[in-house]
Structure formats: C-alpha cells, structure tokens
Amino acid sequence: MLLGKVIGTLTPCRVYPGLEGVPMHWVQPLDKHGAPKGQPLVAADSTRMAGPGELIYFEGGREAALALDPWFVPIDHAIIGIVDELHCPP
Amino acid sequence: MNLGKVAGTLVATRKEASMDGLKFMLVKHVNTEGKETGGQVVAVDAVGVGPGELVLVATGSSARQTSATQNRPCDAVIMAIVDSWEIGGVEKYRKD
Amino acid sequence: MIIGTVSGNIVSTISHPYYIGKRMLVVDKEDFSGKPSGYLIAVDSGVGAGVGERVLVIDEGNSARQVVSDPKAPVRSIIVGIIDRVDAEG
Image (cartoon, chains in turn brown, red, yellow):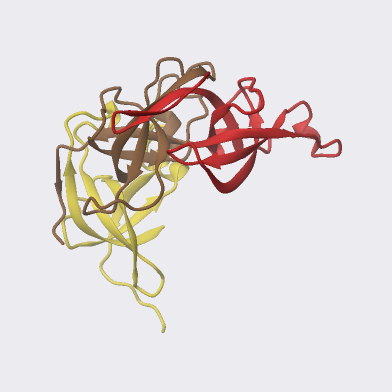
C-alpha cells in the first residue's frame, strides 16, 4: 500500500455491474513524508468516507478489488483507509 | 484506474482462441485536465463505450475480473464511462 | 520477497474492516545492493516488528492471503519476518 491524497472526485455515468454507487476519487500518490510522487490516478473508495484533501492509503492490483463488495469487479486501485496520524521521522 | 479517451476500435482476426468475441478499443491516456499524455493502451470493452468517450481503464490481473475477461489473457479493461470529475472543487469535465 | 527497514507507523480509525486492529507500518524498501528504493505500507502478520528493524516483506497478494489464511482478505503487502542477518557476496 502507498500513501495518497484525495485531490478530486470522479462521477461515472455507466459502470461495470457491481460498481454502482462506489465512490471514485482522484488520488495523488505521496512519498512517506507526504510530498507528491508520481501521476494522479483514480481509485475506488472501499471506506466510502474519504473526501477531498484527506490523507489516505490505497492498495493496487487485484487486492484492491477484494476490498470491495462484491469483490469480483475490475478495480485496480482502492482506498483502504483514512490516515489519522502518520509517524515517520525523517 | 487510468483515465483515457476512446480513440478507436481495433480488429484482430487471427488471435489467441480464448480471446474470441472480445471487443478491443484503442484508448489514449489523459491527465487530470483531460489532456492527452501521449500514452495509449488497447483495452477490452466491458461496458459498451463509443468513440470519443472518456473512460476508466483497469489494468493488471484486475482486468480479468469481469464476466467477459475471466480466465482470458487480458490485462486492460474499460470498466466505466466518465460523466464528470472535479479537482480541488473545480469541475474539469462534464459529459455532453 | 522484499528486504526493508521499518521507518514509521500509521494510525487509522476509518479503514476497510479487515485492517481494523492491525498494525500498519511504513517500510523503506531496499534493492539488492542495499540502496533505498521507495517505501510501502505493510501490515504486520504478528511478528511484532518495530521502527528501525530490518524486515522481510511479501508484496504479492496470493502469498499474503495464504499467510493470513483468508482467501478474501484485501491484503498484498505483509511483514512476515524480522531479519537477523543477511550474508551476501559483493
């Protein structure tokens, strides 16, 4: 998993069956100190509670889909949780 | 997922037998502003897209998690058509 | 598997149910020559790794799900050991 910041929200008009209502957010991947690293991507929100500006962690690959219900859906990045505190001394 | 714009369709008559019946689309990657980034991918269409539409493409083993692509050699699938998105509260795109 | 050093931890209240109560650690990855090569957030399988310790991390979903004995767990990165010593030539 990697850290990311929710920078925006995306609304689909048609989705693969099983993904109806699943929030989709733009996520900027971050390094471990919170600085942007890499290109923004779109992730499904398994917590359904993440919002713009929040620090989150997300999973990539098939495991991302397993965080959703139903899990047999074509999702390659999913927000797994919202970070309350990050303890990572330089 | 990556955001992309459907640039065209792709037809391959001779291909791996288990891929028969799949619909291939040529998708150009776009960034958060909707501008093309230069990258492109051939993806299987799982939702029924049309040319010019902005779509989400899932890649890797996740791409095989649709009824059309399950247990088939596929590593990119179009799984959503985009209606709109916003960045930092500013709407960047809305489908006509 | 990956060799890394635990450099921090994450506190998260809102997360996928599977991760509630799990220890989430920031691990600095290292490549074959020992150079840093990015980071990842991994869950502790129960080995009790702490900050500063060199650990063995599995970053592959099927193996990770075997470790946690749950075929539906949305887990890919998991700490499976604390490294005492690595003997390598060069």
